[in-house]
Length: 365
Image (cartoon, rainbow, N blue to C red; front, side, top):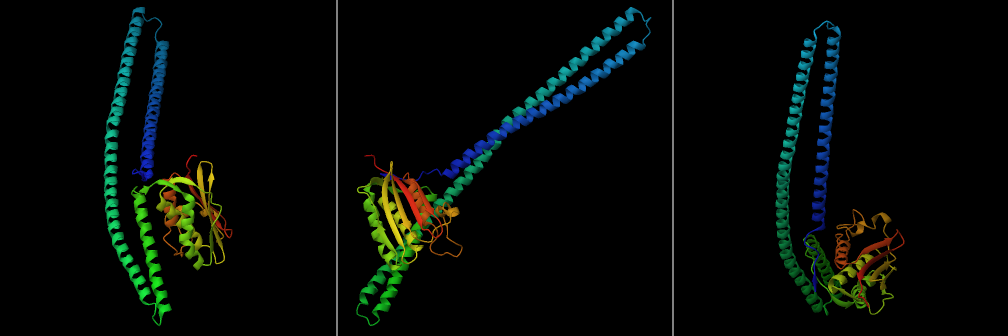
């Protein structure tokens, strides 16, 4: 059974969702602003008309009051009829003006309705083009990184093999211990370089959504023992006690053996680096509800509470001058655990050690 991190990155999905939300918000605000402007314009026009009507009525009343009362009734009737004609003409002109304003507003709205999709389509096309270029660049980078890492690993393996050959030939040499120390260093440096290359390849795979895993049924109790055994020499060399504690057997789950071994090795190696000589590291696993919970518990330096989330980000370092790795191990571990459907977290305080927890979905009994 093969699983991979989804091809479509969450960042792109969030970008697209944010873009849609911003467009909808802009549409609502534009419509509201246009309607508000139209209402203000209508109110101004209506106010001006009311003022004009009031002035006209006042002028007519003054004219009627000053008119000779002896004006013949026929003339008064003619004046009234003329006024009705003038008022009707004014109403027609106002209605025609209102109609033109509505038509112009409708035309502007239709124009915006036509122009906005075209502008947005152009923006989307530019975005897709940039994404395609970015994807091509990433694919080229990944291909290049794959070829270079393959060649570097071949060279490193050659160095390690040569150092082992020299170590065997130096068994009876007069300076045997000195030369064996140097060949051991060569092997150790080669192994470290190989791990760094592996971390860089893993990060590139995560970014490309291609962190492949072979998920099979397994017993995590055996996995914990294997991880501890693999790092026992490293812990002993630093004077740190590394033990397996309270692992329930069997602890069955579906997981990628090599990837989960990588996670445990990263967490244990990290604890070894930051635990002083004479300290302890305990590794255990237990069932918690529907999950299996792993814990790597050390008596090391501890981590400030404000950094407990940051430590799982890529290139995180304890300090600016810390050179004990690239700061990728915990980031890669988080991605692997989350790809399995689990969660990883840390509990710590300065001087009180650190407890690194992660979970895996357990098999239902």
